[in-house]
Image (cartoon, rainbow, N blue to C red; front, side, top):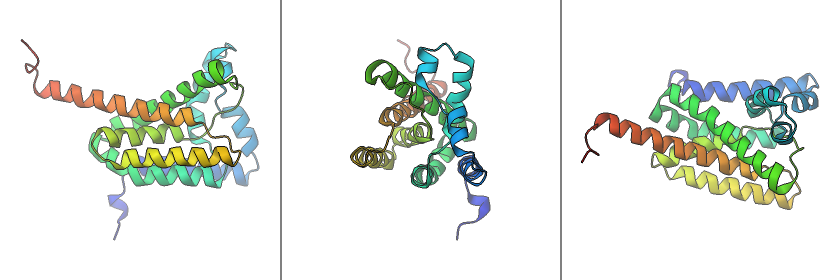
Length: 201
Protein backbone atom coordinates (compact mmCIF):
# COMPACT_ATOMS: atom_id res chain seq x y z
CA UNK A 1 0.00 0.00 0.00
CA UNK A 2 1.35 3.42 -1.00
CA UNK A 3 1.88 5.74 1.96
CA UNK A 4 1.93 9.53 1.75
CA UNK A 5 5.39 9.56 3.26
CA UNK A 6 6.68 7.50 0.33
CA UNK A 7 5.49 9.93 -2.33
CA UNK A 8 8.30 11.85 -4.08
CA UNK A 9 7.78 15.37 -2.66
CA UNK A 10 8.93 17.48 -5.61
CA UNK A 11 7.06 15.42 -8.19
CA UNK A 12 3.95 15.43 -6.02
CA UNK A 13 4.18 19.19 -5.51
CA UNK A 14 4.53 19.79 -9.25
CA UNK A 15 1.47 17.63 -9.94
CA UNK A 16 -0.57 19.48 -7.31
CA UNK A 17 0.51 22.94 -8.52
CA UNK A 18 -0.43 22.13 -12.11
CA UNK A 19 -3.83 20.81 -11.01
CA UNK A 20 -4.49 23.88 -8.84
CA UNK A 21 -3.61 26.32 -11.63
CA UNK A 22 -5.85 24.45 -14.06
CA UNK A 23 -8.71 24.16 -11.56
CA UNK A 24 -8.49 27.86 -10.72
CA UNK A 25 -8.71 28.84 -14.39
CA UNK A 26 -11.69 26.57 -15.01
CA UNK A 27 -13.75 27.36 -11.91
CA UNK A 28 -13.03 31.10 -11.99
CA UNK A 29 -13.76 31.22 -15.73
CA UNK A 30 -10.41 32.93 -16.31
CA UNK A 31 -8.71 30.13 -18.27
CA UNK A 32 -8.56 32.07 -21.54
CA UNK A 33 -7.22 35.14 -19.75
CA UNK A 34 -4.53 33.09 -18.00
CA UNK A 35 -3.43 31.56 -21.30
CA UNK A 36 -3.29 34.98 -22.99
CA UNK A 37 -1.44 36.70 -20.15
CA UNK A 38 0.96 33.95 -19.10
CA UNK A 39 1.49 31.71 -22.13
CA UNK A 40 4.75 31.98 -24.07
CA UNK A 41 4.59 33.75 -27.46
CA UNK A 42 7.85 33.10 -29.38
CA UNK A 43 7.70 36.18 -31.59
CA UNK A 44 7.50 38.43 -28.56
CA UNK A 45 10.89 37.11 -27.48
CA UNK A 46 12.66 36.74 -30.81
CA UNK A 47 11.09 39.55 -32.81
CA UNK A 48 9.14 41.80 -30.47
CA UNK A 49 11.72 42.89 -27.93
CA UNK A 50 9.63 41.96 -24.88
CA UNK A 51 12.55 40.28 -23.11
CA UNK A 52 11.56 40.50 -19.43
CA UNK A 53 7.91 39.64 -20.04
CA UNK A 54 8.92 36.74 -22.29
CA UNK A 55 11.31 35.34 -19.67
CA UNK A 56 8.47 35.39 -17.13
CA UNK A 57 6.15 33.70 -19.62
CA UNK A 58 8.74 30.98 -20.30
CA UNK A 59 8.31 29.91 -16.68
CA UNK A 60 4.59 30.52 -16.18
CA UNK A 61 3.64 28.73 -19.41
CA UNK A 62 4.95 25.47 -17.92
CA UNK A 63 2.08 25.42 -15.43
CA UNK A 64 -0.82 26.18 -17.79
CA UNK A 65 -2.86 23.57 -19.67
CA UNK A 66 -5.54 23.89 -22.31
CA UNK A 67 -7.92 21.13 -21.26
CA UNK A 68 -8.52 17.90 -19.36
CA UNK A 69 -6.82 15.65 -21.94
CA UNK A 70 -3.79 17.96 -22.08
CA UNK A 71 -3.19 18.09 -18.33
CA UNK A 72 -4.14 14.44 -17.75
CA UNK A 73 -1.62 13.12 -20.27
CA UNK A 74 1.17 15.37 -18.99
CA UNK A 75 0.62 14.71 -15.31
CA UNK A 76 0.27 10.97 -15.81
CA UNK A 77 3.71 10.95 -17.46
CA UNK A 78 5.12 13.15 -14.67
CA UNK A 79 3.65 10.99 -11.91
CA UNK A 80 4.80 7.78 -13.60
CA UNK A 81 8.41 8.81 -14.33
CA UNK A 82 9.07 11.67 -11.91
CA UNK A 83 9.62 9.60 -8.79
CA UNK A 84 12.42 7.54 -10.34
CA UNK A 85 14.22 10.63 -11.64
CA UNK A 86 13.77 12.56 -8.40
CA UNK A 87 15.13 9.76 -6.22
CA UNK A 88 18.02 9.11 -8.62
CA UNK A 89 19.48 12.62 -8.90
CA UNK A 90 18.13 14.26 -5.75
CA UNK A 91 15.49 16.93 -5.22
CA UNK A 92 17.49 20.13 -5.95
CA UNK A 93 18.90 18.78 -9.22
CA UNK A 94 15.53 17.36 -10.15
CA UNK A 95 13.67 20.66 -9.84
CA UNK A 96 16.52 22.51 -11.57
CA UNK A 97 16.51 20.10 -14.51
CA UNK A 98 12.72 20.16 -14.67
CA UNK A 99 12.72 23.93 -15.08
CA UNK A 100 15.70 23.97 -17.44
CA UNK A 101 14.11 21.30 -19.62
CA UNK A 102 10.93 23.34 -19.71
CA UNK A 103 12.93 26.37 -20.81
CA UNK A 104 14.89 24.33 -23.33
CA UNK A 105 11.73 22.86 -24.81
CA UNK A 106 10.00 26.24 -25.07
CA UNK A 107 13.02 27.93 -26.63
CA UNK A 108 13.55 25.15 -29.15
CA UNK A 109 9.87 25.31 -30.05
CA UNK A 110 10.10 29.10 -30.27
CA UNK A 111 13.04 29.04 -32.67
CA UNK A 112 11.29 26.53 -34.92
CA UNK A 113 8.00 28.42 -34.77
CA UNK A 114 9.44 31.89 -35.34
CA UNK A 115 12.14 31.20 -37.91
CA UNK A 116 11.06 28.04 -39.75
CA UNK A 117 7.31 27.47 -39.50
CA UNK A 118 6.32 31.12 -39.34
CA UNK A 119 3.73 30.62 -36.58
CA UNK A 120 5.58 32.31 -33.76
CA UNK A 121 2.54 34.32 -32.72
CA UNK A 122 0.81 31.20 -31.44
CA UNK A 123 0.77 30.79 -27.66
CA UNK A 124 2.71 27.90 -26.15
CA UNK A 125 1.42 26.42 -22.90
CA UNK A 126 1.87 23.17 -21.01
CA UNK A 127 4.41 21.21 -19.03
CA UNK A 128 5.31 19.00 -22.00
CA UNK A 129 8.85 20.32 -22.38
CA UNK A 130 9.64 20.02 -18.68
CA UNK A 131 8.08 16.56 -18.43
CA UNK A 132 9.91 15.44 -21.57
CA UNK A 133 13.03 16.55 -19.71
CA UNK A 134 12.12 14.13 -16.92
CA UNK A 135 11.91 11.40 -19.55
CA UNK A 136 15.37 12.49 -20.72
CA UNK A 137 16.69 12.23 -17.16
CA UNK A 138 15.31 8.72 -16.84
CA UNK A 139 16.73 7.70 -20.23
CA UNK A 140 20.18 9.05 -19.31
CA UNK A 141 20.06 7.03 -16.09
CA UNK A 142 19.37 3.85 -18.03
CA UNK A 143 15.60 3.57 -17.55
CA UNK A 144 14.31 2.45 -20.94
CA UNK A 145 10.83 3.67 -20.01
CA UNK A 146 12.04 7.19 -20.77
CA UNK A 147 12.38 6.29 -24.45
CA UNK A 148 9.07 4.43 -24.40
CA UNK A 149 7.29 7.48 -23.08
CA UNK A 150 8.95 9.67 -25.70
CA UNK A 151 7.64 7.29 -28.36
CA UNK A 152 4.15 7.54 -26.83
CA UNK A 153 4.41 11.32 -26.94
CA UNK A 154 5.40 11.20 -30.61
CA UNK A 155 2.33 9.02 -31.26
CA UNK A 156 0.20 11.49 -29.28
CA UNK A 157 1.51 14.35 -31.43
CA UNK A 158 0.74 12.39 -34.60
CA UNK A 159 -2.81 11.67 -33.44
CA UNK A 160 -3.18 15.32 -32.51
CA UNK A 161 -2.10 16.45 -35.97
CA UNK A 162 -4.63 14.12 -37.59
CA UNK A 163 -7.32 15.45 -35.26
CA UNK A 164 -6.26 19.04 -36.05
CA UNK A 165 -5.05 19.66 -32.50
CA UNK A 166 -2.21 22.09 -32.00
CA UNK A 167 0.58 20.16 -30.27
CA UNK A 168 4.08 21.61 -29.92
CA UNK A 169 6.20 18.66 -31.03
CA UNK A 170 9.41 20.72 -30.92
CA UNK A 171 8.85 21.47 -27.23
CA UNK A 172 8.74 17.74 -26.50
CA UNK A 173 11.95 17.13 -28.45
CA UNK A 174 13.75 20.15 -26.97
CA UNK A 175 12.78 19.24 -23.43
CA UNK A 176 13.82 15.60 -23.82
CA UNK A 177 17.18 16.58 -25.36
CA UNK A 178 17.81 19.12 -22.58
CA UNK A 179 17.04 16.63 -19.80
CA UNK A 180 19.10 13.92 -21.46
CA UNK A 181 22.13 16.14 -22.11
CA UNK A 182 22.17 17.83 -18.70
CA UNK A 183 21.82 14.51 -16.87
CA UNK A 184 24.68 13.01 -18.86
CA UNK A 185 26.72 16.11 -17.98
CA UNK A 186 25.89 15.65 -14.28
CA UNK A 187 26.90 11.99 -14.48
CA UNK A 188 30.21 12.92 -16.09
CA UNK A 189 30.91 15.66 -13.54
CA UNK A 190 30.15 13.26 -10.71
CA UNK A 191 32.45 10.66 -12.26
CA UNK A 192 35.29 13.17 -12.52
CA UNK A 193 34.65 14.34 -8.97
CA UNK A 194 35.06 10.80 -7.70
CA UNK A 195 38.05 10.06 -9.97
CA UNK A 196 39.79 13.44 -10.48
CA UNK A 197 42.99 11.93 -11.92
CA UNK A 198 41.41 9.35 -14.20
CA UNK A 199 41.70 11.44 -17.40
CA UNK A 200 45.17 12.84 -16.76
CA UNK A 201 48.02 11.63 -19.02
